[in-house]
Amino acid sequence: MSTRFAVLLGLLVVVVISAPAADPELEIRVIYDNTSAREDVQPDWGFSSVVTFRGRRALFDSGTKPDLFLANLEKMGVEPSSIETAMISHEHPDHRNGVNKLYPLYPKMSVYFLDAFYEKAFEEAAAAGMKVSREVRPYELIPGAYSTGMIPGDPPEQSLAIETSKGVVLIVGCSHPGIVTIVEQVKRQRGVDSIRLLLGGLHMFQQNERQIRTQIGRLRELNVKRIMSAHCSGDLAKQLFSEVYGDNFEPLGAGKVLRLD
Ligand SMILES: [Zn+2]
Ligand SMILES: [Zn+2]
Image 1: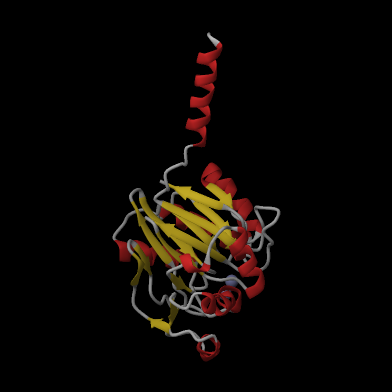
Image 2: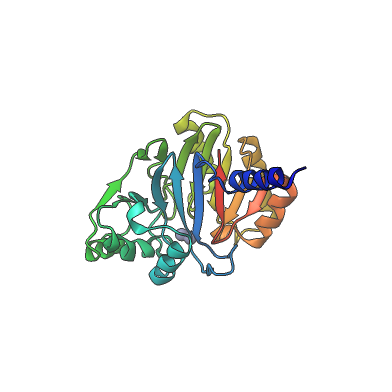
């Protein structure tokens, strides 16, 4: 091989390697979680993720400590002005607090609560200058991504179903209505017979092995193909999911970026 040819070949390799990858259809960045997947992104009790679907961006939940939430958001490369809409799964502060400090940085953002949230949530939102939508029925958050609307529970909750080209990706906050109930609702609402990926807080941290195994069995029957646990899922649940789901299970953490085509 001539030296010149070798240099040209080398250049070509550099160009090919450094060419930017095409944007995936769906990208999910975990901003806030009980555990961390990246050294500089701090963990804390709570949940938040940023969803970018076909070029449109939404926030799902917003963590407990607003300053930590904003710091993590910055470390994860998310500009407040890139978030066009925000959805809060339920009234608890570990999912709701951050948006009160995020909203004033980009007041064009639309914010969706459930009508059933307690009064304090609306008072704090108003104090931050927010005009929130009070939802009951399912609605489209960004094109192709739908809230379940209010699912009764203690407290009531909404989850996000994203209709990707390879099936529904379901994001849940804390699963207070019960994860099996949520999955059943989503399958009915979206008219699908399987869930491509279920991701978020599964609320099994206070449950015993028998209770958890029953739910894992139901999730398999409901044809949930892949699971990524976060937040309030609990260590025992992680262990049992990993046993049953094998490679189709993965625990998440703040700092994790997921790309799906
Ligand atoms: Zn909660
Ligand atoms: Zn929670």
